[in-house]
Amino acid sequence: MRIQEGLDPTAEAENDLRDVDAPSATSPEGRPQGAPDLQAATRALRELEAAKARVERDAARAAQEMRERLVVELLPIVDNLDRTIRAALNSGNAPAVVEGARLVRSQFMGVLERYGVERIDSRHQPFDPAIHEAVGTVPVTHAAANNVVVDQVEPGYRFGSRLLRPAKVVVGRHAGRYH
Image 1 (cartoon, rainbow, N blue to C red):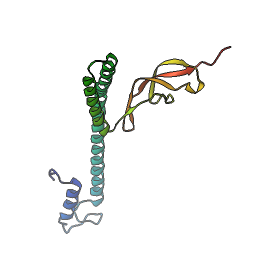
Image 2 (image 1 turned 90 degrees about the vertical axis):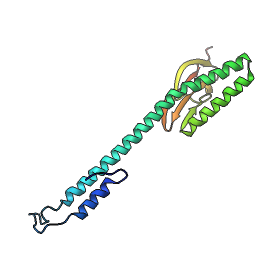
Image 3 (image 1 turned 30 degrees about the vertical axis):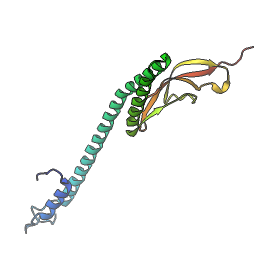
Image 4 (image 1 turned 180 degrees about the horizontal axis):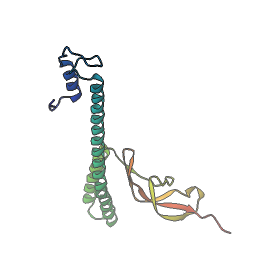
């Protein structure tokens, strides 16, 4: 049997089984000799369908992994755009350049978001080691600020349900008062 592009191999196999001419002699099992074993054919079809499903799952997983790798490589570009905008704002130079960089950054993030990338902004959120990487701590005077993100050094990113990069944060630590 030759599989042609665009045809379902399981449907072809079923058609082949229906087209078999049954000879007059019978086997010990009571089926015509030379006739296909329907149980074996059914089993082979199930195995083929399972293999097809496995190949499709593997292809989808490979495509998802490739998209994730691409996004991870693009995130430093977003970080550099953010740094450029901050530096230009701090220097007070070229407001038109700052606005242009903001527009490019916004467009770039829009594309990433359409593909399922979500930015994790963490300021004033409770520290969560599942999505945050603490790069430092600072003393805080109020107990409610204990274990709360007081500054974000670098945002985190999620792609669908998978964390691509944790947010790098500074966490508040309440030391209490000693008298």
